[in-house]
Amino acid sequence: MTGGSFETIVIGDGIAGWAAAAVLARRGQAVAVLGRAQGLPPVGEYLPPEGVAALAALGLDGVLRSAGHRPSGGTVSIWGSDAPLRRDVLMQPGGRAYCVDRRALEADLRRMAEEAGAVAQTLSAPPAVTGGAGAWQLDLRGGPAPLTARFLIDATGRAAWLARALGARVTRRDDLTALAMFWSGAPTEDAALRSESLPDGWCYAAPLSGERLVTVFLTHAAALPRGTAARRALALERIAGSRLAGVLCAGARAEGFRAMAAGSQLTKPGCGLGWAAIGDAAMAFDPLASAGMTKALLDIRETVGGRALAPAALAERRRDRFAAYLAELRDVYAAERRFGGPFWTPRQSS
Image 1 (tube, rainbow, N blue to C red):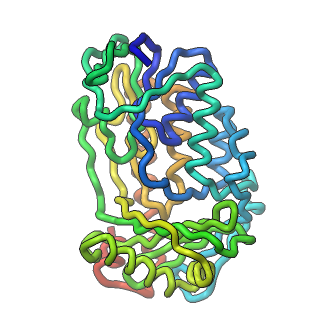
Image 2: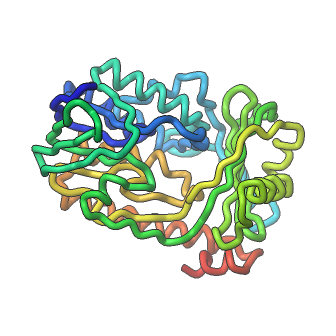
C-alpha cells in the first residue's frame, strides 16, 4: 500500500477489525486495514449461540466451517457448589456453539475481506491521525504517502489506541489478570467449555482442534508473583488443582504461556463523528461473560452493519449494554459463596 483514499480505514487486524472490513468490503466500500506484526497467539474463544447468530446476521458465519473450530455441546461448570453443572446448548435458542481457534478465525475473516477488495498494511508504529469526519488523514510515519478516509474504526483491542488519540479515556473497573497456557495432546473429544471457581480466582479450559487445548487461570493482579517463570508456575499449579481442567492436562504437553489483562473496562467516548471503536476497544468484558466476540459482532452491526446507529444513539446503546453486563457479572460472582478473601469478596459485593 503506497497511500490512497478509502471510505473506511480500520486500525487493528484482529477478529473485530477483519470482520468489520469484510462487511464493508462486501458492500463495495474501499477499505484498508492497518495492523501490527503478529505477536503471541491469541487465546481461544467460546462462541455461544447468540454469537453464532450475530455472525450469521453479518453474513460471516461461513467461517465456522473451518477445521480450526469445534462445535460445542455446551458448558460444564463448578460454581457455587461442589457439584458439576452441565448446560446443553441444544436446549437454548439457536442451539449451536463453537470453541473457536482465534488465529484461524482471523485468517478466514481476512481472506473474506481481501477477496471482497479490502487491502492491508502492517505497521511498525502507530500512524499520526489528523483531520476529522469525512476527511481523515493518516501519516504512516515513513510511508511514501498518507492515507485518507471518510470514516475510521478503532479495532485495537484493550489498548483503544485510536480512541485515546482522539481524546477518549479508558476506565478500568478491576485488575483481573489472565494466565493462559496452551497444550497439545489433550483429550478433547468432549468439546465443552469448562469453568471452575477456585479459592483465589477461577479457571476455564477450551478445547481446540487437533487435540489442542487452552487453559486460563484468572486472579487479581495483586496476587501475582513477579516474573514470567513464577506466573507460569502459578498457572500450572492452579490448573492442576482444578477438577475439570486438571484431568484434561494430566497427560498433555504445555507449549506456551502468556499473561494479559482481563478485567472490565469502558472507553468514553467510544464513538464520535466520523469514527467508532468496536470490540474490546469500545468496552472489554470479564471472560466469565463468554461474550467478548459476540459483543464485537454486535458493535459491527450497530456501527457499520445493517442496523447502524447515529453516534448519540450508539453511545446510549453501549452505556446500557455495559450497565447490564456489570449487573449480570455481579450476580454471577455473588453466586459463589464458598470462598471469600481479597479476590472474591470485592466481586461478590460490587
